[in-house]
Picture 1: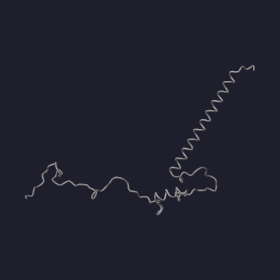
Picture 2 (picture 1 turned 45 degrees about the horizontal axis):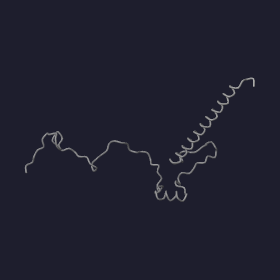
Picture 3 (picture 1 turned 180 degrees about the vertical axis):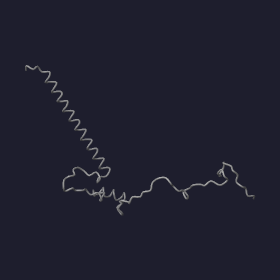
Picture 4 (picture 1 turned 90 degrees about the vertical axis):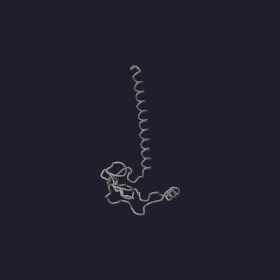
Length: 130
């Protein structure tokens, strides 16, 4: 078998200069894009709970997330709920409650406005001599 020299062909598996193209795969790929996380991790070791444990605690009525304890401010300066201590489902429920209260307050205001307008119209229809 004779040794064949690669030609300057651009077809096939050669580059224009006669050398073989480099193949990238999972063993030799080096990524240059993206960011590297440089901040210290804020995770607490051994604080994971399995799905089975979560369901079991929920079924027994036990607290699910032990690490989320409410903050009590003795000075009384802070009012309301600390959203940082709620999970997403609690925030969603709170949002729905607030939306419901706003909607009811709007309806109540509309009723009062309509009643006031109706009373105002009736008082203007009556003759002043009565």
